[in-house]
Image (tube, rainbow, N blue to C red; front, side):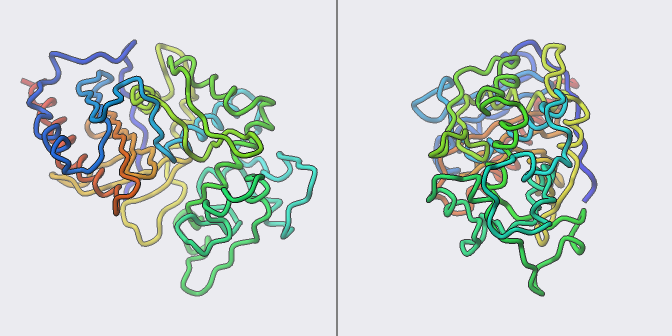
Length: 359
């Protein structure tokens, strides 16, 4: 798989529905298919091309002001804040050690030099040394076990070191020298690292990102001890999600202001880990870097993904940013529904818009 690089698209002062670039017929079949339930419970779809919003539709009773819980899309936003904290000089860099940065009063269980050496980059790439996997119900670090106790950060730090039986690839044998294991508890802990480094509550420091983009009244979820959950559950409007993705498509610029450094955007959208056995899926700094089948070959996508098939994507080959929100939490393989929606309807619709723009 070739490396996915970020794409700089022009940013408009505000999103507005274009009457010149799009035609209702471009996405008519998609609207009908979603209304018919072909993709189960899709709640909103937004499509922007060249920074202009060309399609916006809400398929539930709530509408555009609804703060939508897109689950793990929150993780990518936490990664954005890490870059800002580094740029602000509050966090020394991705090599900052997690345990000593947190400087907790109690020593974690299962002490090990490898735990002490665990870095911010390990958490950004889901490839740290601790035994944590949300995709394995037997994992000691499984997300559902974390929610049963008060101290979510302590839960993560107390985990033992990951073992590698013969059938599991060691980091040294894995792409980029990292063994990827999806771990919400690690990103939750990354939120605590940000709080310690910035001296602010995570939800307050987040306004450093949200305020320039006009994002108001975010709905955070909190641990029993009051830590904002950087690993999931943040409620934002669909247009807020579109603005965050467009920010990265524009290299971190918004209305001429460098909200996130271009270097951090590029580093975030560069592969640092890969899913062994899942061709076409790599991982940046809390960004999914994907190649999924499309009508005319692979569709390249840089994505913020969450449970239920929620997905916010940059499609660099189409100069586009898209938002798909859902409540498909109890649907089998909901992400496949989202991929099919993109491949069967959104990409062909974008192609029709592009063809007309060239005429």
